[in-house]
Image (cartoon, rainbow, N blue to C red; front, side, top):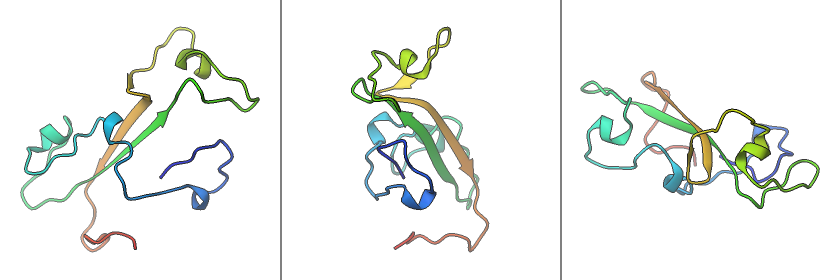
Length: 113
């Protein structure tokens, strides 16, 4: 799910797609037949267990504008950071991964249609 503006007022107005648009800047490795740790360093899966990983991140580019229409020269300037430098992967920053084990029957393999 994503937005390309700062005017989203409801989750219903977020854009979504089934592509892997954020894969290049993801801290999750999209792999098949790999060990859980090769997919994400903190991922542990017991035999017969299912896991869902959700990655949240923000993206920034030099051409983005703030609420007043001003462009910022750096990510630090855009965020108003003076001491801290956020870790980035590509143009993304603040990557966070949530891992959970779904209760049986809550999700299916087909996903939303």
